[in-house]
Image (cartoon, rainbow, N blue to C red; front, side, top):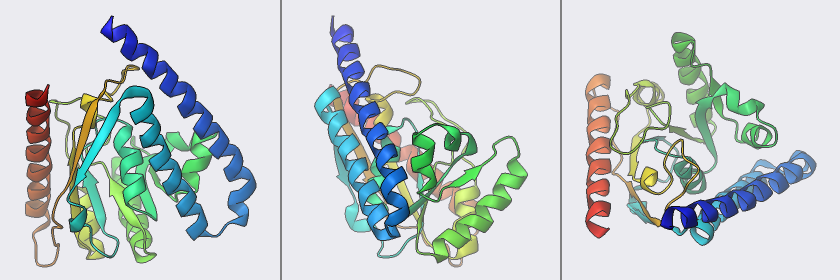
Length: 246
């Protein structure tokens, strides 16, 4: 019975989600060419918060963000674990203007892909890892120089809670090349919004923004290991905390 209720609430969420994305797509086609970047960013940021709020209303997915004081004044490379679509909206709302590293196929999705293009993403071809890394370094450095945050999910794809995926070194490599800090982020979004499942479950997504990790004078591989250990440790702690609460 409980799972049926969760499914019903999830379907209601998707109806609202499709409506929001559809309206934004139409608005973007009409207004975005006439708006400057600041206004575009504000609109997209507002939509991200709206989607998080709708997930709370429809599915009971609340959130708690700690470590906001660790966010630096200027853009850097944000590295986060990837468990669902939820964190893409959360990090999109927190870090603007932003360029997200994503698979290029997403840009071909009607409406959704149109909106993504306005975020000036770094759209890579995962089937060509060497070329993708060169593209990430070149475009990422350019985006950072333009004053954009670069958000990277080093696992490359969504990973269910408790599972582990390979942590690619592209994020740290970019930060070292551009001489900017790395800002690690950990969360437990997959507990409420599991990858590959239609059903969303009520609960609290906890997001932890860590202290920045400087790249100056650091060995790239050692820094990468430090970032990975921090994110994995924090994620495990959040899962354990949520298990105790339930």
